[in-house]
Length: 75
Image (cartoon, rainbow, N blue to C red; front, side, top):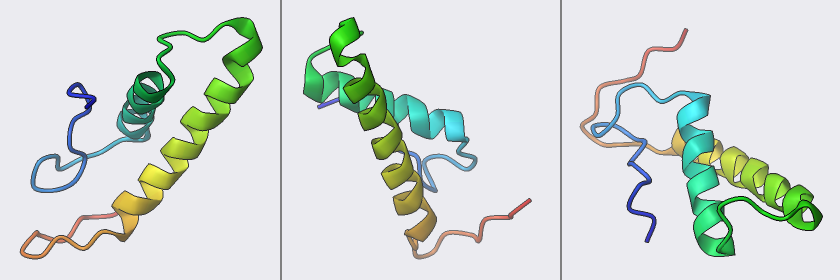
């Protein structure tokens, strides 16, 4: 599945941006919907799904505890 989606947690990725998370969400929604770019009548549903997956992914990454990983610095 979605081989172009990279792992976004340490130790695989040290710095993850909101753009990284959104790009992964977009790839996921494209994969499961079967649309690279939805038709106009599906655009709103597609965009809402991307935003929902982005939020869920960000929440997941924020709550994961990776044992043995060095603590992340917050800005």
